Image (tube, rainbow, N blue to C red; front, side, top):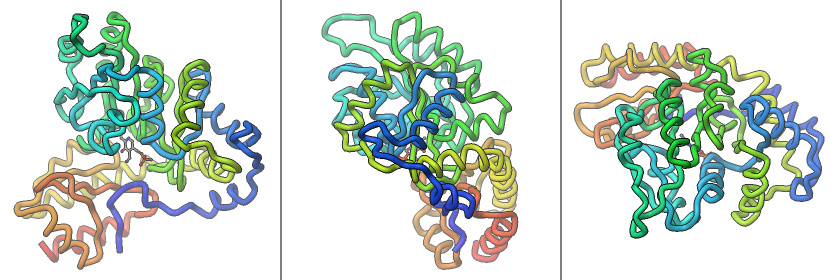
Length: 337
Ligand SMILES: Cc1ncc(COP(=O)(O)O)c(C=O)c1O
């Protein structure tokens, strides 16, 4: 089976397993795990923020940010295809008690003036606008990179209106590798950033939330409340550190393979895809009939992808698929479609 469902399906590499075995650990609920502390400080330094917090998942990381930045009844402005609005099981309402104001962007990118126009004017009967979230790269839009200029323009509005600014940077590494813009440059305008170690970097588990020391102290308390306090979790932090130090540059290979895949798919009449739109490791393409039956046909032939709409399929490249696997996928799809 060639698994292109997600960049989360990778298995730990031999070097990563060794790093996990050798990890120095302690009880992190008592703040005594040296490897967790090392990971938190390495990532917060890389992103130019004061402090970091290791958490089990990207969802928890985003939700802690929402919880700390807002009060129940506040409004959070985000893009309508964002992970926070669509793929976090309604947590923003259930856990932070906020309401979401979704704006449809163009391929995941919101025109800053639309954000400006959507910020409420302050009547007491309105929800209190409090936070703007963006996603870089944007998953549902197909791994689209949020342009730095647009982020900076949005930030001017955010600051003028005294809101907070959160980045869901689950795949910020991909944006940085693809553009050469450093993670710190991307992170600078934001109050908080969530990054995932378990996506293209190839760690089995884990995300890190960064921000000011005060923000992270509050997030630390809510992490415990949400059941995310972990004990000898340096074993997993070691995997994250190994991924960050040794596997980040490999993302360029994933990007090149996604392009090759998209070009190959565009040559198959049953599919519709524009390879010039592939910016990182995600390929979105449309099928003529319905995505579910196309995916069943692929599965029977040994290829896994995921549906992202009635006619839309997502394929994601990652470190456990090589050039030969991509060639094989294209051979199979040419044969069965
Ligand atoms: C953009 C984005 N944010 C957040 C997440 C959540 O990460 P996790 O699955 O670790 O909770 C994902 C997961 O795919 C994602 O794509």
